[in-house]
Amino acid sequence: MFRPLSLYIGSRYTRAKRRNHYISFISLSSMIGLALGVLSMIVVLSVMNGFQREMSARILGLVPHAMVFASEPSTQWLSQMERAEQAPGVVAAAPLTELEGMLSYKGTMQPIQVHGIDPAYEPAVSIIGSRLIAGELDDLEPGRFGVIVGLMTARRFGLSVGDKLTLIVPEASSAAGGVTPRLQRLTVVGVFKVGAELDGSLAMIHRADAARILRWGEQAVEGVRLKVDDLYQAPVIARNLAGALGETFAANDWTQTQGSLFSAMKMEKTMIGLLLMLIIAVAAFNIIATLIMVVADKRADIAILRTLGATPGQIMAVFVVQGSIIGFTGTLLGGVLGVLTALNVSEVVGWLERLSGQAIFSSDVYFISTLPSELRSSDVALVSIAALAMSFLATLYPAWRAAQTSPAEALRYE
Image (cartoon, rainbow, N blue to C red; front, side, top):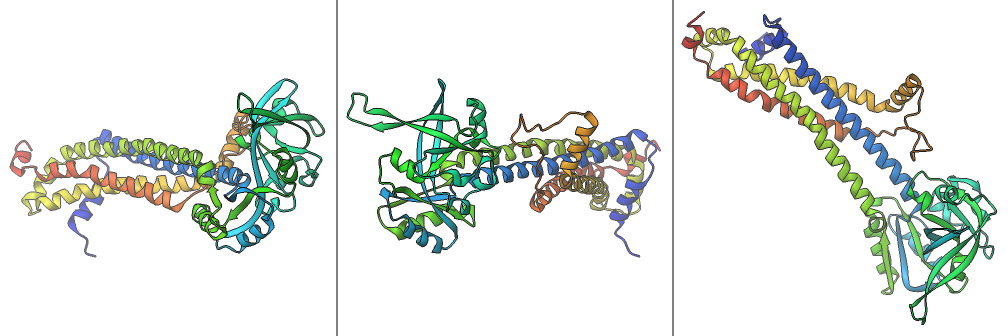
């Protein structure tokens, strides 16, 4: 069977047992280093994808994907909801009133964002119903001034269902300071846990109670909250809906309220990826060292091939093939191990916890108790292509040096 000369000799050099065992050791080290670099990048990127997915599901499961609101509180929110649910890309809608203030309990205070919701419509746009660890969503009854707080808030204040605390809301006035505090006594009717910072910064009351606190009509709400099928289209969907509802309507979306968090997560993933790419780069530089020593060890063979008619291009191709085989093998090995590890990272962490006898991710310390992972084919392809490209580039200089070998000079002392 016909095989190109360079491919045949390059593959033979890779398989052959060398006289210099140190060169074999360096070659094996390069291959293992490349495999470890590829494995590390695939696993770390998959874990970061898992963290981003978990945070998106938890945070964006509570905060609005988007919201449309008029310049004044509206009592026509039912008709606005119906129009919103008919808009392209909108999955569901619910009334919402947002206010900010301070919670006070036995001399301790903390800032809080309060959502005025309707328990009848909220489950369609929020995951709050499935995240309650005490109480029920229907316990938010109009006029009762009940409140559902996050677990971190409950722990900070030592709250349980039935306890009373005070909500302090700033109110514009004609007083000297321009603002006077408005106090409202609230009763804890539930506690939720989503495993994010929202557990300590968000609380929920009935929309009618929120309207009373803000001194609106009982049926008035600030706007309509939207749940969309494509998060990245939320700004366009909300803007189009606000325009359709009228000139007095405006819109905001999660990219304005939570965009900085997800931008930071994306930047963190990019920077960690670049740092891990250095591991692959180091392994690629080891291929350069390996091939330089191989070229020095094979000077006589190169000279003989040149005298038999091999061109400098063929000699160069021999060592490009040899280095590429090392790079391909290391990348393939690292890719397979990386995919298997990323798909079973929770089991690996569980095994390490059983082996060490200690919890690596304790739910009392971290927001999660297991290590999430989301393997993406695009990440695997990107890492593999980068590793192969660096491996190929690492072969060019040693191969060029081999092609410049003078047969007469190399055979002088043989």
